Image 1 (spheres, rainbow, N blue to C red):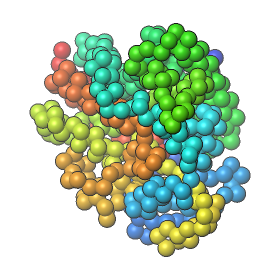
Image 2 (image 1 turned 30 degrees about the horizontal axis):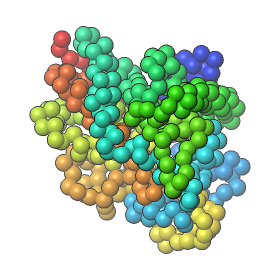
Image 3 (image 1 turned 120 degrees about the vertical axis):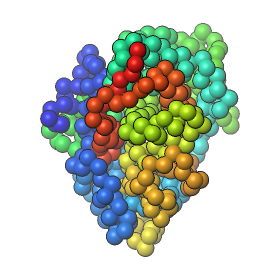
Image 4 (image 1 turned 60 degrees about the vertical axis):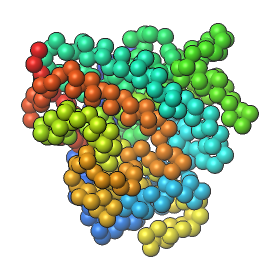
Length: 432
């Protein structure tokens, strides 16, 4: 069933239902275990730095392994080792990401290093400053969320993942970008982004079709965005939306071309389509399974930021990162030769019992601890982290405001998957 789902959802002619594309991405990266946490715990104790690629072992596409299998790969499971790698961008390069999503999206910022990364991040950073975000919260994020909840509130029940979580992040990013209102285009954006994410495949029988679909989706997305960017510049760059901010941005005397702005928009959408949807779905799943805890959050909204931080530790939506050693180095007593790749098991590091007290417990009141790795770490910390957190905080507050009797409408949802983790559905009900 998993293998059949990919081609049917990657309809590059009509870009069908984003729900099917979302499921396709989940299937692609579901792997051979629904929950690998016990396996990771064993590795942290017995082989925190192990030879071989755990992603391939678990049956998912890897960012670290070469297609021909020629590259030596090590897998890291402990928090401190992973943090050490992410902190040292000179010794551990990010260019492997240009072989994965970069194959479809070009020179994405997460795959850049050194001066090139510094330049691009410096140009993009003004679009993500806290002062800019504050304006987006009231003018864009809350209105989009309220509009979507208006549509489902009279029904008394919904699958929040399919009816709400899957759509609001893309619609918010679409509005934040400054695109003209076009509901049909927003659905196409979502399907394009998800088709790109499903491009890497471990099964050769699916690889050719998924790559073709991903390349076409990336091309169609760029062709849609570039004329809008060009028109905005020609009209005179006004407004404080992200597109205008990027068009005006300067860093050390350099600016972004129309093509670079369009490429950045294309790069951002897959993250918006996936990461926020899965993170918020995981948060809701964990709270809804704990009615008493949900009631505490409802009564004390100051708990929400801690709940968001904790879900990014306990159930991050992305399980792995990848880096490549630029020189011979030693990690955890293991010699890593120059050129070797590293699969960093973020999901394991976030539950390292030597770093986090009661690491296997979902604790939204967790005492201050080292930062979780759900948004990355170091110079490649997710540039959109504050935007993602703001969306989740506003969405949870809105749900609690609107639906005082919100509860599960069926068995507790199970968070599954190896790399992209989330529940398959979130059926809920409320009084109307």
